[in-house]
Image (cartoon, rainbow, N blue to C red; front, side, top):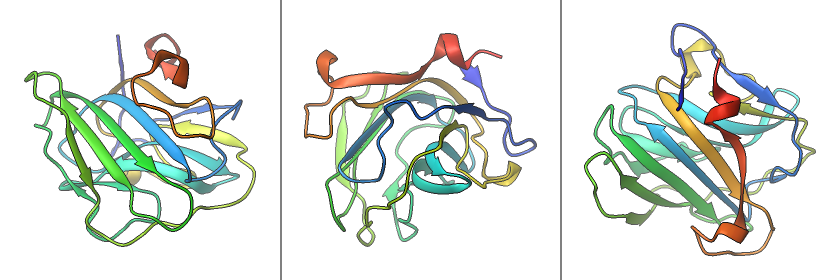
Length: 178
């Protein structure tokens, strides 16, 4: 089961306490199982008040990590298809790497660096994790599709994507339901 988010007509979000969320954008691995929308929207963000420390989202043509507003990673997932969307970034000012897989069409994994500039690590204490938007984002920035689960590494060290011991679920379908 998934949660359908109501952007861009409403700022439909869920706020979680930060728990053990990553404090910044490096190193970070962010994974989500989403239904790709036709428009713009942020999947989730870790915020210091209303300022995003990290966030991951899609505009109509590219996937972006927070502060990567150049070319991002071209969208290759068909609208309304379920897909794994994973972004990895090392420490420092580096280029995010995107790992995408359209599971509706049983496609293979695509692993590609973003085609823009580097993204620096943000600093500050994470005070909340927002699913369906970024901190301070309004309805126009809200996610316009469904989200089944999101996760990030449980350790601040590099781990292989897909390793059960390496990830923790930030939110799953049971907590995303209305």
